[in-house]
Amino acid sequence: ILNVEQSPQSLHVQEGDSTNFTCSFPSSNFYALHWYRWETAKSPEALFVMTLNGDEKKKGRISATLNTKEGYSYLYIKGSQPEDSATYLCAQGGEYGNKLVFGAGTILRVKS
Amino acid sequence: DAGVIQSPRHEVTEMGQEVTLRCKPISGHDYLFWYRQTMMRGLELLIYFNNNVPIDDSGMPEDRFSAKMPNASFSTLKIQPSEPRDSAVYFCASSLAGVDTGELFFGEGSRLTVL
Image (tube, rainbow over all chains, first blue to last red; front, side, top):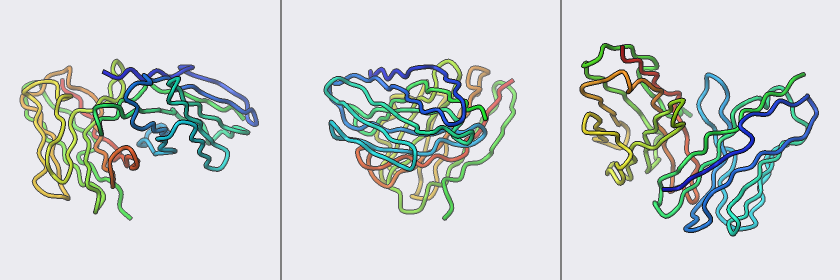
């Protein structure tokens, strides 16, 4: 059974600060790594899908990197804004094919 | 474009009653997933379908849970009989391709409360 861990559990930053979170996962039988943003009272929305070691993806002020050999992914937010406040989830697909296993998430609160 | 549509959004029922949750995936998506969100276990996969065929139901908690996908545009998750520990938010998600290339598109969830 895959064990996906995210840290920190929660984070409070000031508007304009840059921040990053970590997603750790078993490096064996890696298949894919997903990042989602989940705003309160809404449903999770995909940010990135990554499959290759060394992958780096960017969407606006948000970027992500992937290291499949050591089993981690970083999500970076540059110049945090209040609208970035959300729970950020990562999920790994491994040897069980399309069975994505989600981490518990990192809760980000950006104060203006 | 319409996203994934789930109904009902909220359901409150008595223990022992049958509960049916419904999902309409995005048109053209080959994969459909049912997830359950709880405080204790986070988002956990219950079952997923590929081209209407159940592929992996190992996450279904017990025989009280069943899921069907009679056609490409409709799926149900049924709990019979329901128990208080089934209280959770149930999400349906669909994807165009497998998770190696396809992101999941989630519905807004069905919040179930079993009294």
